[in-house]
Length: 320
Image (cartoon, rainbow, N blue to C red; front, top):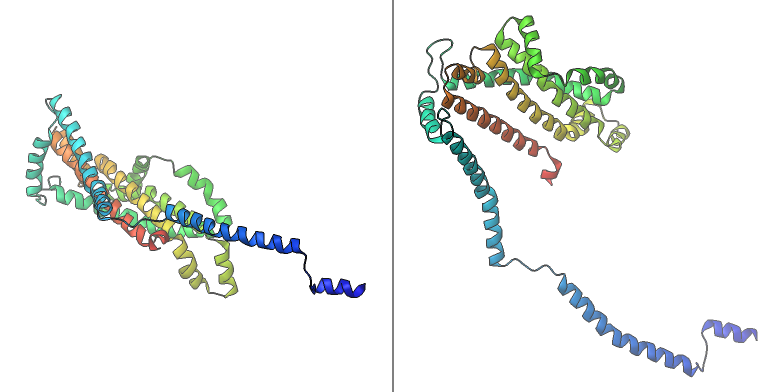
């Protein structure tokens, strides 16, 4: 009895049941019929979701779509602006039309660097004076704000100590700092540079601190395991990780600095695109005021575009 159990357990059965054979044959036949069906289903499913290669017409449509987005859309926006401008000029006798402004701009830019005295210089000299003040104020803000942002992000005590001060001073209007600058420096250009400095330091400092705080702790743990020096940690881990945040702060700071300098120059006088605009208002020359507005806008757009290109250079997403 034990031998029979062992033999059956070992699969040693000389006469297998007929029912078992029939079932096996039926299962094999069903599988044989099911395989082509499954293969057909898989083939139809794969053909249904297969990616069709782009034809010549598809490539042409994609190219036309890119052209529309890159050229036609901006030109349509510019045409809409000119249309609104022309309608505004038709309903006001003193407001200059685009054509009148264009003729006036030709005269202004025919000699942009003339110099007839302290308060009578071309628009080119005024624009360069404003950019120079922005460079000084923004450069000082970067020298102070970026290292301080790293320190705030790394040191919890310093973060808690400076957070109330930053929250108190950051919402203050830029022009509110101008009288203090005039009192301290007794000089209008220096006061304008100080105002740019105090207003453009916050975006760089805050964004840099946020970038430092969002560095994954695993990176720092690996640096600790590898026993990297402080300089290596800064150059290989902190700086590459914080760079996208820092560049965002730099871009915001430049925009703030350009806004502040125009308003400060309108109040302090001297040279600068803001002073030139205010001086043309005193002369009731609306065409020159519109020219100044367009020059300010184009200059800010160029600065913004240059910094966006620089920011993409340090973006991990773009690098991939």
